[in-house]
Image (cartoon, rainbow, N blue to C red; front, side, top):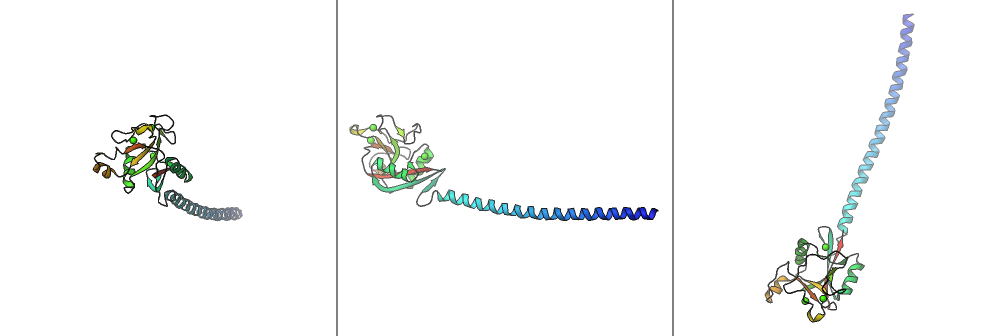
Length: 197
Ligand SMILES: [Ca+2]
Ligand SMILES: [Ca+2]
Ligand SMILES: [Ca+2]
């Protein structure tokens, strides 16, 4: 009697053991599958990160310079203020908006060969009220001493003097934070475009 009970119990246990082994196999398979999809996800994330960084770098390629979160292009093409602005806009940018000392100092360093370049600032709408091209409030200006002077009542567009030394030599002692002037908008000079990232 006891023997038959024991045999029955043993058989039950064997069945349970088989079931458990089967479950364990299934879990192992699931675990393997999860590992594979985790690896795939890691690969995908890595590829995406490479893509993002190449896109970010790409935005400042082709002679565009990176500073903080903008790309800049110093255009050697000499044309009037409106045409310069149009060219910047065709490149998904606009004439540069200089809204910090750091940006001003960066720009002074980028194009020492050009004497003066257009920036995105004008008082064409209302004489004496300077406006950035994107509507950013105009707060601090880095004008040369005595500027803006609206000479002959006809100077409504702002330029940045890149060659500080040349100006100082000409008897206009100046610094990188005193480098803007207003000149007539029709003059043909190079320009700097800025594209925000
Ligand atoms: Ca800017
Ligand atoms: Ca003016
Ligand atoms: Ca002037």
